[in-house]
Length: 498
Image (cartoon, rainbow, N blue to C red; front, side, top):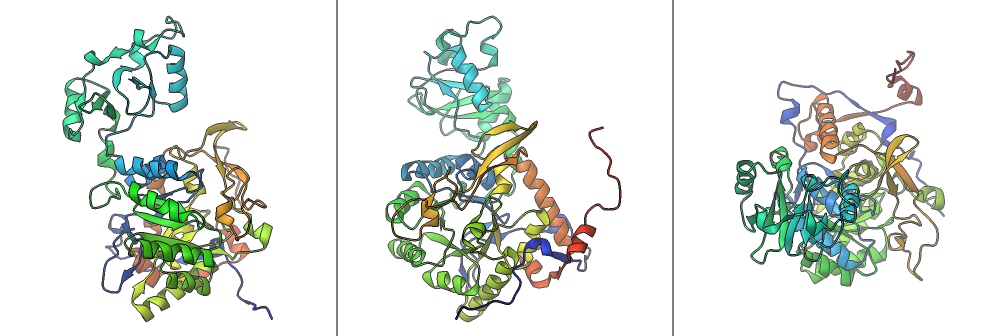
């Protein structure tokens, strides 16, 4: 006979936080959002911690190297999507590990034989006004010149004019040598009134640009998440099909942590994947697993050796697993049960396994609720897909800017491995949609606002750390009527467009 759960499957929107005592020390500046990323023994510190409790979803439309760099610089971590060839995913990981604060790899490059039309098209595509002219047009080719807006006039120059006829040639460029310190590069920029400084190696190959506009940037990232070698940290998603070929390449590229990307983590395939990684690398490679929604699923992955466990099925904004298969559970209910299982497991074994809440976040206060209910950190897709740093196109739709956003279970992504149930390969039906999200601008600007809200909410709860929030938060169920009461009501709102 089937087993029945009489508990209602609840979402974050059905709960509110009750204020706690806010004492004089409970100020936003005193709030720490540090969170463990991987498992650790009682009395020890985790080998990896997040400075803010956010990771970006393992999705084509969210997590590439640009998102990984931006999020790590602001204290979180990206898991670069695995639904791509092994070599391209590994290269994305390398780009993150090679990134140096203030040193930017050029993604706007042409050859001397290209034309002004090519320059204009590239600038419109990338939004970057500095173009590196290399012998082969690649990022790290031999530098032959630079083109900026000062080198041409669209109103007078022919569009078929060759780049070599108007670029600033190499012998007239002020440059820095590879190995130069950032402060030295900035001194050259300021002393020579430059907007950018190319950095070349001993063979004249372009390595980086240092830009005047980025001078203050590195000072604006006090939460930067880096490893022991002061390189940005980055994760990578894997599947349970080609992990024996994919994982060694990702580890060699420098991935700090892995995560099995699956809609259902309660499976023999996922256990075999985690166990293989643990055995092959003698436990030195950290790997998360999921997704699960109950105690039984948590214990299954914990015993397999998962370093963190993702919680949530069907709660993502683009996920239709519940509609298609009738599988899933309300995110709040899932977190509450799995967190209790995690705490019980910790008491019994002395090993603490962080849990990641994946999906179900609609409002910023839901993030605090998820942490108060027991999550250690949050994985989000829609939230990060809105930003400049996500890999999708910014478009104008119905007179407003949007960015494309699609699920890994959509026909567009065709990530059948994520929904693999064994047997023949192929995406048999969709479990995700292809959509748009409102464009929101830069990641840092939005994340600063979100973090400000979270810290303020935590202060109202009387908590200055996530651990204290878990232990002392007071949470109440709300009725449908009280949800209406919580918003603007019984007033006539002013038209802000007037």
